[in-house]
Length: 285
Image (cartoon, rainbow, N blue to C red; front, side, top):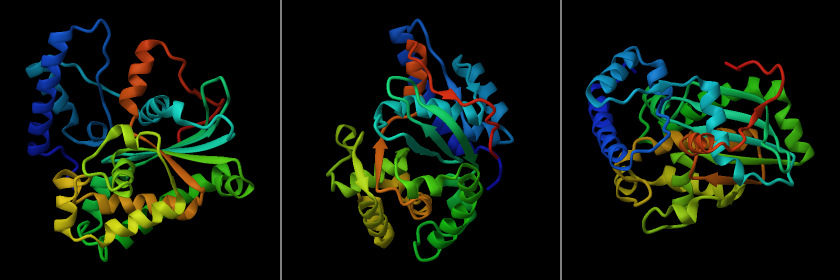
């Protein structure tokens, strides 16, 4: 890892944002909010890149803090929570970080955030830092162990394992990793958001699909319609993260959301009540 946004990544992002600019000019929305997250927060040249975006495209990106990123992801996914299960553990796996949120579910009200943590490990930087992500026999065990260690303090602080043993805890996941696993589990001939968003996978199904992915060769991952070239070198890291959480927190099923920060921003612009932080909950590091 260089600590900098690469030229290739910046050019790719500029091309994507140019498409967004054309759409904004076409539809002329009355309200909009454009944010940057972990990559620009951490990159040495993140500010330079955002200045370039403003200068060349006229887009002014707001770099949001980890806490707000976690709250926006929760707002986007909150409708998938079961109101009859009083506690929830939500995670959002990104390229450079993973956000975990411990929640009280309140029927008829936004969920209450009891605790949260932003772990500075996602599928991209975890894979880059811990060896050959394309070989499950070498990269996977290291990535799994490193991520598992990062979970322990959060677990102890909020008594999550004890709450799971007592019952009444649900798990909700949002990210490309979990939607990829769901698509593979369903044997979809091509990715279909309508079939994936909101699906529940049992803990046994999660273990089986993770094992299936780790046993795939590189060519099989490249050619799989729910993985493809963009994620083939990262999906093993995603499995390592999922498996670390699955083993530490053996909740019977995982509900999967193909939604997150973008939907949270949209709901905020619509005036939908946002999730709330419990009093005196400092940011976890």
